[in-house]
Length: 331
Ligand SMILES: [Zn+2]
Image (tube, rainbow, N blue to C red; front, top):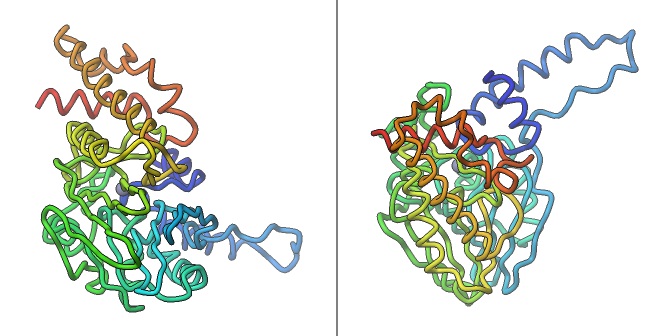
């Protein structure tokens, strides 16, 4: 079951949780070694082993104006601000593609990143911290991101394993509780803590005020059911609070960078908030009717939202989301 999930996640390039990312990266050398051993000189037609997962640099640069862009590839979406005052970036994807991403960003930005902010601690968003820090970036994050990367607070993966601490160079050196502002390249950049634990207990949004661009990290994945990482303190109620806060910040014109998926609009986030609130009410109605978890899942209470939020890009199914909400409401 877990193997199937991992396979589908890897195939979609959507490992949005550190647990799948960690298992993927451990599995990769074994797979490559097996393929290499089984290939013999007598069989030159054997296809070359597939490249190890999550080793490719970002492949798309979406220009959002005023020096701001969204970089897309394997792992979470990156944000980048380029200008004379220095390069500022949001998130850094995996440890395994960090060297490739650093080279690509140097090419795009004509310089190495000076400031790096993590939206949260997961390995597909903050996994490159060590490489970028060693290249000269100062890493900023919320206090809880540092606690999880140092191992001071344990993070439990979906398979129940405790995620090991990251190398010391990967730890944020500037942390904040509620927010911090940056002023460079003609932009006011606001890092804003989500009001409640949502995807994790350390989620941060980053708003480029003048460029009118808002990066929401994994509190928002475009048109997908959310990953509530309860092993990192996440809550479904937090997703509702986070998107309400995001909608206080965003204007109708604001360009929204999701943690995963294509560039989004304020209307897309409104639709996601309506889904979260509707889903919570629908599951609550089942609980109030005395239904068990199994009966609630079988009733498919999220059916009206699944065509939009449970499509091919989603690795969280409607059943998984129902289960998370049910368990949270029963607490
Ligand atoms: Zn994440």
